[in-house]
Image 1 (tube, rainbow, N blue to C red):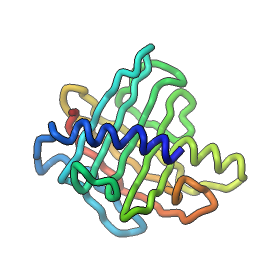
Image 2: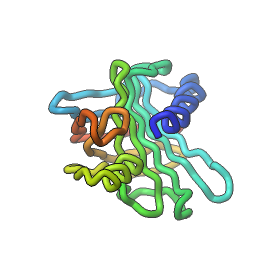
Image 3: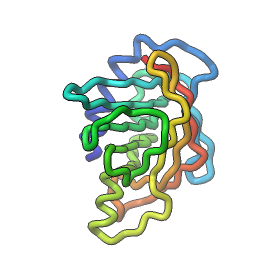
Length: 175
């Protein structure tokens, strides 16, 4: 699933990188294994109409508009259940949404979300802190604001190295 998520996220980064407006208030910040991390150089939200009533919301924080190895992305898709993507809480086991996230740092990718949670069930591996994202504000001609946290696994493999992301917060402009 890593390659699928990267495939979906990276074109968004490249396509939208030219239209980014700088505002010091826009950010994606979190704590990873106790160390604070903040992205302000390149942040955005994007809502894509995938057709047939399906929508994809991407939230991104990156070190730069061309960064492939230092970013955090969150992806929510409504295709399993339809309906609007709106303010509210989304979890890695929300039945009517696909929720995915990747944290890429220095060439190491860590993932959380539906595919990781599904894999944990298959292999009977408990996840202490399931991924959740709470969107408190979502105005598609304005901003997306919210929080997130969860256990991320290297390359999305529940048998691999785990990192914990806590105190996640985003305030990003729609592009």
